[in-house]
Image (cartoon, rainbow, N blue to C red; front, side, top):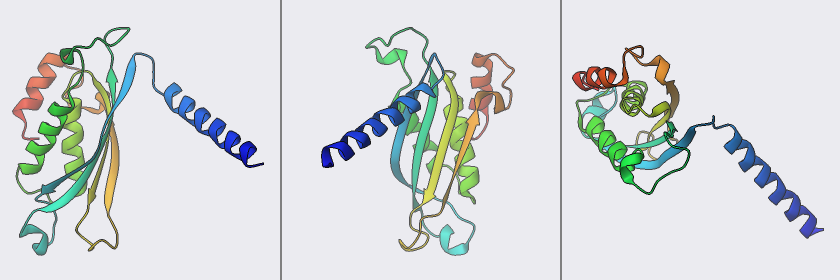
Amino acid sequence: MLETILSAQCARGAATADAQLSSIPAGLYELFLENVVLPCRIGVFDYERGAPQRVRIDLLLQVRQDGAQFSDDIGDVLSYDDLLSGLKRILMDEHTNLVEMLAEKIARMCLAHEQVQSARVSVAKLDIYDGVAVPGIRLERTRDQMPGSSLPASHRLMVMADRRI
């Protein structure tokens, strides 16, 4: 009986994994960066403006794969290091009032990489309710929602570089 139950659970798990993989459009792959916990100057209340507080950021990106197969060259893929450096730059920037705006800035940073087709961003404020609850938001943005998305990718990156993200 136990073997039958475990076998059914394994089959459901495999079917779920297959369904998730099949939901990724052809020519794309998903890249994730999860549980990034960093200090951030964020919040609308006076007590939040005194010192940075921890935020947790999760990214799920759909990235265009230019070749039929991956090479083993870091230059052919989007680097996790570039994403983490971009997050750190945004979080060290000026004070942000709302997690919604912080998530929007992060999505713009991700979509500034021309191979990123969509960005799902989750931002949670970890310290706000003394561990009783963790508030936050999730949003998803696609390349066609980007300001200037009709511009060539090289020009779009220059436009984004000129903005304070």
